[in-house]
Image 1 (cartoon, one colour):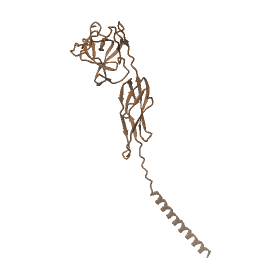
Image 2 (cartoon, helix red, strand yellow; image 1 turned 180 degrees about the vertical axis):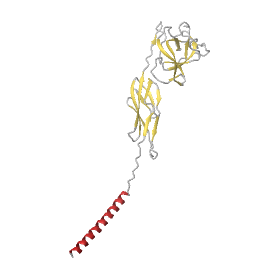
Image 3 (tube, helix red, strand yellow; image 1 turned 90 degrees about the horizontal axis):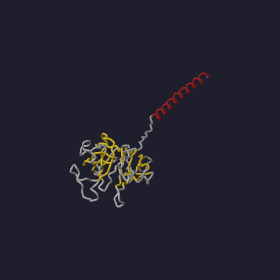
Image 4 (cartoon, one colour; image 1 turned 60 degrees about the vertical axis):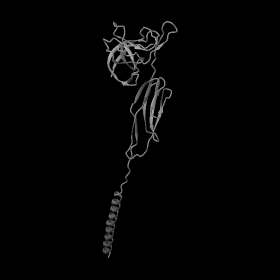
Length: 259
């Protein structure tokens, strides 16, 4: 009797263990079949193409930006433009920077509703022109501007066309000339062009052919005239349109071909 009872108990325990194992396995299998799907959407990105910009006082430059968003990001982001130093440089709602005075400022482009932003360092330099005084106090003055480079990589002419530096022509003494005395009448050049301030320079045509575009400082000029200093090839006369003195006012200024 005791043996039969013991056998019955052992059989029931074995059956219970088998059933428990199956139930556990079923639960485990059921749990393992459940997966949590959570897609991680990448944050949008914004990048100002220029990390650093150097401008002359009064100059402007429009900054370009690239925006990258996830294909399922349906937000229509706006760009908020911020200047950390409005006394040095301001920025419009379209990303146009205006240089106000010498110094540095950081321009930020931020995506609205996010903390995502990009920065551009703006350096503003002031070109200190030299005023030339001539003879009588009634004589007019010529202010020399943009004849010293600010270290930029692009250079413009009077029409707003941009150029880059080509081969260096050499270092020159820069002098100024204008219409004869104070007559105010138009001055014809050796090339047949009318002398124009901001365009015309006079050169030794044996060294620099007429029609050559030259970068002096931050501006592009055209060799349209011949100067009288034939014995001095290292002289370039810049046409100003107002009365000038014959003395040279800037020495050892590097001049480059514009391309």
